[in-house]
Length: 538
Image (tube, rainbow, N blue to C red):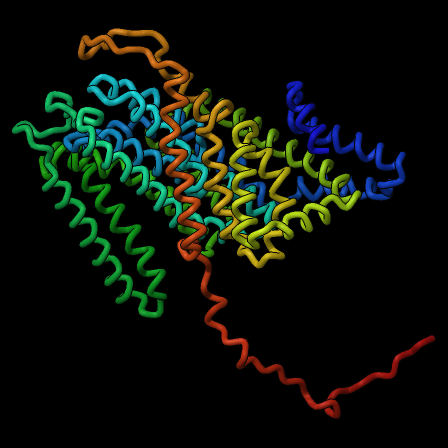
């Protein structure tokens, strides 16, 4: 079945229809050979309906719509421009800015294509203009864009949670720390490269720092003062809420106090800019005004999910509404923007749904001939126990990532791996996070890494003259883009090793651990106190 599926895919047929066609063809063959019971096909309508009625998957269109609206409303441009100015004086500052913005876009848009293309169009020309190594420039943009795979609200985490039978909230909570570690490893790589090869990642020249003060300083003191005022406002709000509502939980007070304090700082920076009060520096106003709306949206979505206030589907709905309000507040919400975002959301959602339906047809035949039993026994007999299983699984998924999309791998392979992982006693949330990091590498591995294609679409092929500096910038070849991603693939492999060696970095909800099961007692009333009614057997 798998060999036939690969052959059909190589002929160029769509994945969803290939899965369904191969599944039905082998169901017919199994019936003819007496290996497959035709009654299994009676369960097919119920399985398809189960896919379409799955409320967890409803979060996918919500998060997709949120990301597309934010990307098309210019939030990425504002972030890259402002954060680039903030980190500009530092050696390798533009690369740090790309990593930071990539992580923030991942937490808001969750769409790899939007992140890579936006940063490629905006940051790449600036990095090439000021002498950045082309391998570092293209590689860091692609790697930062792929953070959308592991930083919640990642779509692949939703799919993995559904396929592994775990909670999306647990998957989000578990992926948060590994995603931050991976982001830090990217920044550490840039730092090391900037130390070893200073000319590969220079600082922005003084004339390019347009948010500097008239005296040439960047105005960081003013930024620290504004941040201190925000924290002071947060502390005051928490104290005031404690006095007004002493019965309010400490967590609730912290949440409301933080929200009110950040809003107060945002309004203060906005008033300073609009009325030219001169209270803060240009960089201080720009950073607060640009960063607060996406951070507020991140808290609205992820905060409510991780705190258990909202389900992932509800969080996605709030995120989509928040993105609409942000675009409306920036006066960039047009009918054309909304129409394009909805159209792209419908296409992606349909794409995911049809692949999942095709995978269910394929899996039904596979289960009907006891393929899952054979697969589980095969995986359980791998030498080396759990470590051998993990090594083999990661190698298989890493190799398939060269040729298949992460959706296809998740829908076809993960349901076959989950029973064996559970039988070996592997925590499925940890297993899912590890697979998400592995699948993230598929975006950077040739020949079919999607981040490579996205980067190719926005990089200059031929030499061109930069309009600002007047320098001749050499074009970037496709092989250069392929090579630029290899260093970050190695970093992702290192991250997989960290997860295997230190599984505790995947955070889990510890509420259940607070219950001592040895002290639980179940008491029933004495049998004499129960009023038993005779059974009427007639």
